[in-house]
Image 1: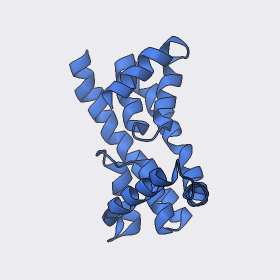
Image 2: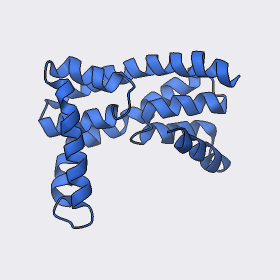
Image 3: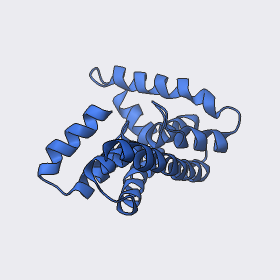
Length: 166
């Protein structure tokens, strides 16, 4: 993840604002809000600016994933090039779905909110969509998870990492 963040900040930072860099990082799967906040610390962006930018960037893809991913996967699954990738993504998401078995809402919120590798809003939305969880319920759980992740990552990024970098 650090290599990706460094690439974005060094490469894109030459052409767009630092705020736009953290916004783009927050939009992307894998990096999401977590990567955006770490990049914000590395770029010296104050947390009062970084938090809303990263949250908005992390939220934007979620409705599209919840509404359209099943149809997109259906359309791409028969293709030779992307079919194996789609099946791998579906298998990976379904393997992680065991975290949601006990309580859909709490499970999804914790899955999105606790910053561990392979978790986050993108994967949470994918799992919610594939499991057919109600869109209202999953949207609220994912938003709560994003809020939880933003608190955890702000503390980690600005208190812990910020003291190391400074």
